[in-house]
Image (tube, rainbow, N blue to C red; front, side, top):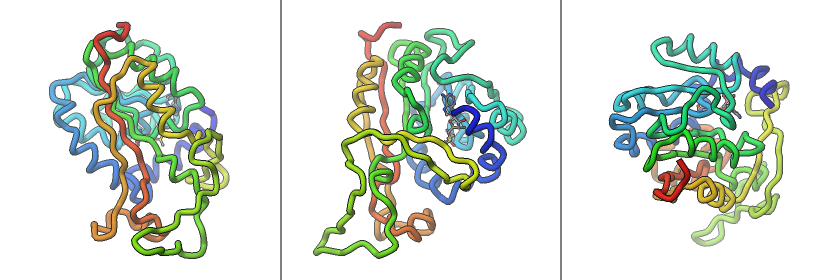
Length: 249
Ligand SMILES: C[S@@+](CC[C@H](N)C(=O)[O-])C[C@H]1O[C@@H](n2cnc3c(N)ncnc32)[C@H](O)[C@@H]1O
């Protein structure tokens, strides 16, 4: 899996800041959460090129981005030379001491993990008591259905979605968003499995939301979603967890 990201690394670095407009949904959501970062030591897990770090460092005391692809970390350092980036696996976070961070973010990354529960447990131990984890994942609704050439059928106020895969199952998929030659593995999981992982890692859920672009909103934010007929559909799911006082330190 790491090899896939190394192979796709340069291509990813070239498109990450634009990423077909998907970032335009995550960015305003993070802007609603800035208070979290006030004076905080922030760990960005699976940081990629750190494209949201500018929002975080406005308020944070410190920022460390960790990503397991050395190609991507080299690129992140090139693109954002004033920030700290390190090569490391989210499941082990080598060199990160227990209780040394106040906030961890895992943005658009856990759906690319075979074992996100391991990463969440390790993230939990890296946080001090009361620390927060902010997670954004690709919404499973997106991987439950195959894009249809035909327009969706409008039935009264409702749009029929047509699921091609059970919303409730877990499965692995090959994602070719970086091109056919650089497939990335992803894991479609029901939302409840992320809730269970958070609880098992000692986090209380304090906030949950689904990110979508709705009819009437600024469609220019996500031209790709409009083109693919995805207006009104959840594109990302976001969870904010707080390390519970009973969680092991
Ligand atoms: C879709 S990118 C998202 C990057 C960034 N968080 C963002 O929102 O722009 C996923 C990133 O996670 C990294 N990644 C995937 N699995 C990882 C793991 N087990 N440990 C560390 N990084 C990982 C990949 O190398 C890639 O850079």
